[in-house]
Structure formats: structure tokens, C-alpha cells
Image (cartoon, rainbow over the protein chains, first blue to last red):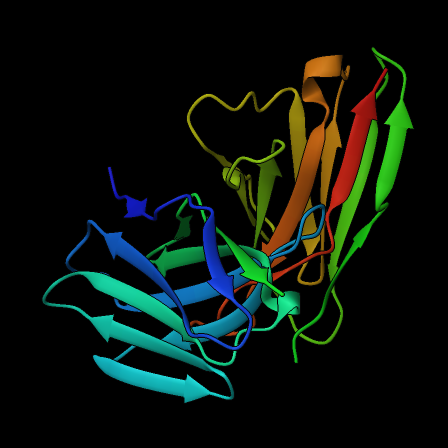
Length: 108
Length: 115
């Protein structure tokens, strides 16, 4: 059974600080990794994809992948109250498998 | 970017009736679409994988006779909840991808309430 694990939170971060979200996955052969943001009552929105070891930056977001450790993370710099949401880590093989999500709360 | 349109966004129906939810890929062809269900404060649960021109593949525990999926074209998949009951009340979301390396784009979701 392939699994994606995330801490459910809530993770509280002061406005302007860096929010760090972590995810581990069970299938060592996985190749594609995604971070989605989901606001309450809304569908998930893709914010980052990463396929290679290392860091990938897009604006205030940085995704980090370490395949040897089977670990994916998402850093959000200069956190804003609008970043408050649930962040879903996802791993794709023949179908996409989601973690249960981490609730992030940015404190004004 | 890829856009997936899902309708209706919200529906209330009586117990025992059927409800159809549509999911369209607007600017790309989706050979495969996925249907999820999400209960309040829970994660997405994959219900089935919808393949254009063939039968859907259902996840374990999902009743294929209750959740009918049709994927008649490369841009349209439908989910019909038959003989709905209050326990079917949930947030139903479809998703699709444009290419093999793309992330999945989600529809806006359908909030189903069965009374």
C-alpha cells in the first residue's frame, strides 16, 4: 500500500516568517511530487511540482525533494494570512496519492 | 494553464433520487479523469479513474452501481450518484491532467447534500 504521510497540524506561523511543511512517501520508485493548497470548501490548487532532487523555487515557494530519504518539503517565505489553508502533498505513479494534508495558520 | 470545469457547484436533492455531476477539460484533452470524494476536514479519497471510451476503474469499497461514471469524450466525464442517501452527502471533485508530466488540475468541486 503506497502511502504519503503528513503532519495534520495545525501549524501556526507568525506573519512574515517562513512556514515549513513536510511530507514523506513510502514508494522509493516514485518520480513525481506535487504540493496543493486547499482553502476550506474549495478544491485543491496546484502550487508546485518537483521531479528532481534538490530545490525548486517559484516566488515565495520553494519545494525540496530528497529521494534518498523519501522526503518532500515546501517552504513558504514571508508568510501571509492568505497562505492560511490546508497543504496537500501528492505523489504520482499510475495515479496520484494524496497525504491527509497539513493545516497551516498564519498569525497576523 | 489547464482548466477543468465542474458543474453543478452545489446541489441539494431528495433521498432516493439521482444526481449527475459533469467535469469538462476546457483547453486540453483528458484521456483520464479522476473522481474524488472529500468529507469535512478529511483528505481526498479517490473513488474511481475514468478512462475515455472504456469502463471506469473503481477503488476498493466504492460501489460501481451506485456511482456511475461515463467518459464518452476526451473532454467530458460524468459522475452520477444513483439513489442518493444522506450518507452520500459530500464534496465531489474531479481532476485531469494534460500531459504525463503535468500535475493534476482539479475542477471546482460539487457540494452534494442529500435530504
